[in-house]
Image 1: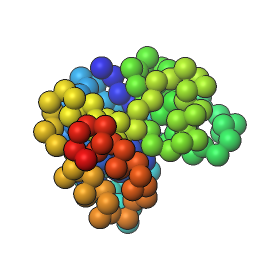
Image 2: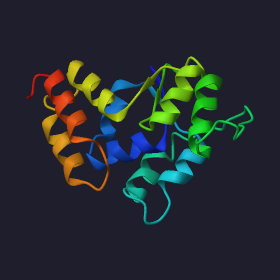
Image 3: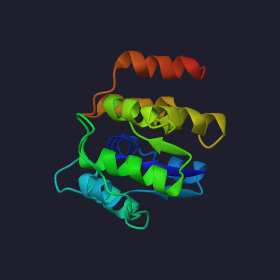
Length: 157
């Protein structure tokens, strides 16, 4: 499975120490340069860890990207273009506007929590609660209701 990753979901996975899940579920993880630059900005959460993680996953985007997609950043637009370019199986993205735009382009999307659910279903991880606890303690905003729904979905609540 080929996964193209956007910054929001990469930051969430790094924050809960779950980047290994990406590699366990995908034979190829790809990241456009724009996303690599976003996640490795000094002072951003998990910047050093993410710079090291993405350095061998950066893939040039040949298709020109346009900023006409309302409210989307450079990284999100590049990630969608890369998905189409490499015919990725899924775009890993948490931002709701980017998810909607990708779905309008017939790109399959999954968020960081959805990826963790897949990891549990495939036996990559035994429990999601420890990852959810790390996210709860972080500065990232993920609604408590969503975390509770995920835990309930996997039988941990």
